[in-house]
Image 1 (cartoon, rainbow, N blue to C red):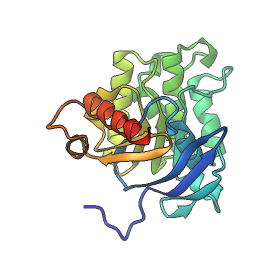
Image 2: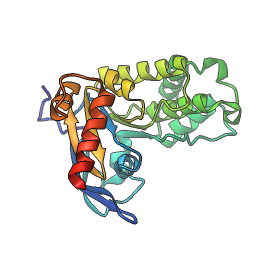
Image 3: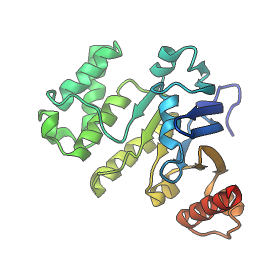
Image 4: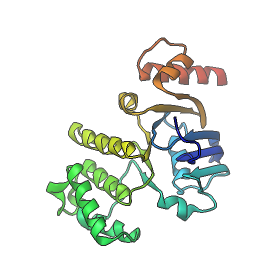
Length: 253
């Protein structure tokens, strides 16, 4: 069990964001330290909007966000120092090679140069980027660019790692490398929150799964707990997910 003297990795209370219609509608969620948590939902359910608010890229209309005990709305810079955000479209500097990019990121975090270089080379090695370490990023495939972006996000040792569709565009070998790196971080005490449409990945990797629909959290728990809520005896996550969303849509109709 988690030690509740230690603040959760993420605590969201009554989070709201409206565009033309409510995208996130009174969402509350607590994720403990050292959890691997998958946030699932249909397209337009509010997953990315929620994570962008947690990452400080979007201002909520209402609600509270606490990251590792830090009020992320009152102290956004402090909150950002303990977290990492990796969007589904990697944002890296095309004219730099992966090592130069990581050196640049280390400078932003004011990391010790020796420690930063050691960590950068380690990440490049374990993510299979070593053969491309001196290749300008504009010459890399989307999958390689995603891995460079992930390396940049992990460089400063964040306690909370947020990934929006991290495996999209990766081949099987690259996906395996990324999954191994993330599992290793969780084993070391970090927390990972991931959205994915690849439900068997969520089923295999996540300890707990949250299902969001129409901006609301409609279910969360282990696979067994979600199965019970869906009224199913076992079944795959895909079957459970589709049942939960269909039940929610039917109730809302």
